[in-house]
Amino acid sequence: MRNKKKTTAISIFISLILFLYIIFTQSDQFEAAYVKSVVDGDTIKVEIDNKTYTVRLIGVNTPETNHPTKGVEPYGLEAKTFTKMMLSRRTVWLEFDVDKNDKYGRFLAYVWLERPKVISKDQIRKNMFNAILLLEGYAQVITIPPNVKYAEYFLDFQREAIQTKKGLWRLKN
Image (tube, rainbow, N blue to C red; front, side, top):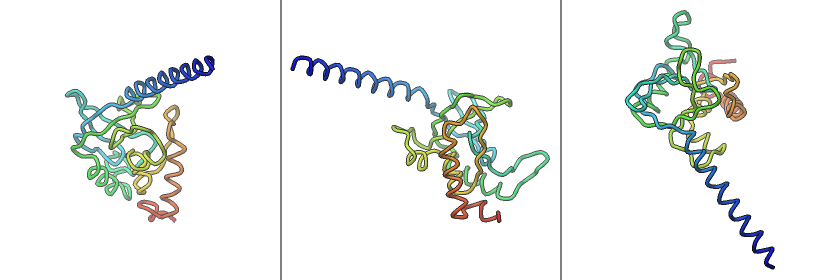
C-alpha cells in the first residue's frame, strides 16, 4: 500500500511539472502586437514596444495588390479589404515558427485574434487569421519549409474552401 501511495505522489508531481512546463513554454510562443496598417491580404504592419514591424503571414498567399510587375490580381482587393476589416487597429498575438524573418527582414508569423489557451483544430479555425483567410477563400496555401507547423491544417482548410467555392475559388474552374 505504501508503494502505491508513493507511486501516486510521484505521478502527481511529474504531472504538475509537465503542466507548468507546458504553460510557461507556450506563453513564450506568443507576442502581443498592435496592427497599425494592412499592406495587402497577407502582410500587415504592427507595433511592438513602440517599434513598427512588417509581418508576412506564414502558410498563406493572397492575390497581389501592390506588386511592381503583377499589379492588382483578381480578388486581391477583396483579400486586402477583408484583412483590414478583421485586423486594423486591434491587438493580435503573433506566433513564430522556425524562421522568424524572411529574406526581406519581415517577421513571419501566425496571427491569432485571441491568445490561444489550447491549440486545437477548432481554435485554429476560429482564432488564427491565417486559417480564416484560407477558410473564407481569400488565400491559397503556400508552404515554405521550415515554417510548416500548421501546413496540414491549412491544406484541409483550403480543400474546404475549394469544395464550397468560397471567395477566389468561385473564380477558378
